[in-house]
Image 1 (cartoon, helix red, strand yellow):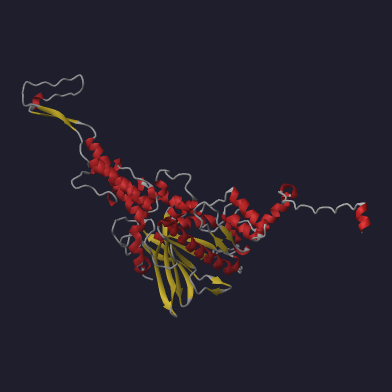
Image 2: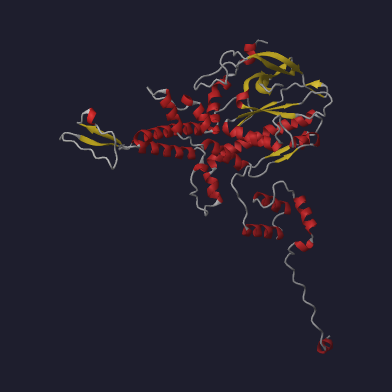
Length: 493
């Protein structure tokens, strides 16, 4: 196959690549932003290289994008996800991906990628080394690695027929080489091919060459076919590519606007304001003396409290050049305005803690609604993709796919029940208003009982503790004894 076909990129990749890079760079922070130089801080016309470097150095980058990403990811994983896998692939709980992530860590990494770039990829694969107790694993790919995909309509349904991803592999001498993995349907069966980079000369411009506004048609490097494999299940080749695209709202191959892009753009604007403000302060913060009407040879060579300037001429004018006017204040206000914009775009964690402790959970929930919509959609998509991938892995080794379950937290605001609410809940159960299972589920939602603990687990724990540790129910009053019978009563009888 021609190298140009292997290295050519999809339109959706070219459309989003620079957007993905901008988000990545703002997440990485100040060092990366300054490394990019004029990509984010244009050089003023006429400024020399030395002066530009000083201009670049003085600016302070406000790391809002990364802090927001960490905060939003933390909202999802404040409650541990529950993952159920059949025995045949239970080892994925401890080692699920090629990076060495546990299943839970893989979910967390996927959440970060979805919240930042809105793009991720999962490939279920299996090592083909003879003699190994092979268990399928999940290979994960970030947005920039998935550079080509093709679909074909069959029977009115669009079907994925080709995916190309880029990987980095460490060689025996410690160097890093680039691989391209091609996943394709050929003659109705799934075939996997691996191409290795064979020389350093580039073909076209590759994605490692950063240029704001540019689009790239090719992946850099020249590649040759290294291996061909036909994965099989029960001795038969597969007829589908076990690859899942994970976007914010769906699992389709198309690319969407990165969720963090708007925030990253404002973050970059804030960075430019900061550099301009610091440059202005540098140029104007120190008063500069001036003297008019004195011959050059008579200009004083020193200044200070112990130095007196005198002149016999009446037209001499002396003074200091000092900064006045609203210039720097305007820059400062522009930065504050952008901080408000970033807060509105999802960066509420950067603001000072001005929320009163008396604000109710419902008020907090309403204030967070604009942020949690992306979280909720992302969580649902990640659950769907990882569930489908784990089900496929289970089927591949003869396990029961119905035993797969992946559930992540969707309650992003703490709603812990207080003592009065718990007492009312238990009282309702004791009165027979609802079942033990219903009460248990409400205690889980109220973050009193761990989400992974079942009703049966709770009953077993109570039995282990013993009756002496439980609070006995309210005693029922005993029936009154019959009244004593006197002699008069006997006579009347």
